[in-house]
Image (tube, rainbow, N blue to C red; front, side):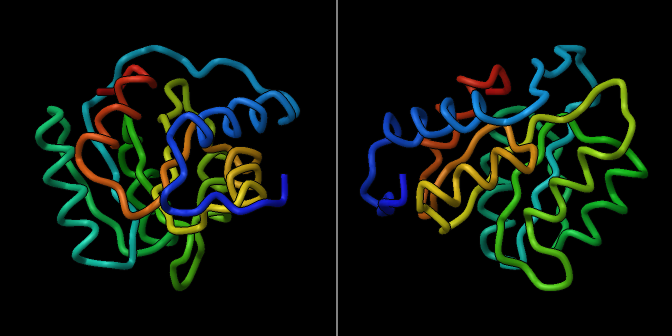
Length: 157
């Protein structure tokens, strides 16, 4: 599983790796399906990516909230836990892996669905992201249709 999944990799390949990584992750359990405020937290150090992702989130009926790094994102989650989190991996201050691990450590009756939206596309990266606590993974660059399809698969589209 050390081969890289390039940008041209099919969503089927990524989905298969995500399923395998989830199966390998210790202590996995289905996330609560309890509905909460329709907030989508978008965590990325790129302002452009945050704005594009916000537009997509709005089109899906979410209230987008932005954070430029993991530290800011954690502070926002402690104020109001979002229903959905779209996070990059490579960010200053606190990367996406550490952010997701810390997010999952926050006690909450309604844990958010977390999707990595990152350029890290190797199979080992996907496994590491899922092991950290992410629910799914999409490799940049992605378009609106790909993100919508991913979120619909997770019941968040």
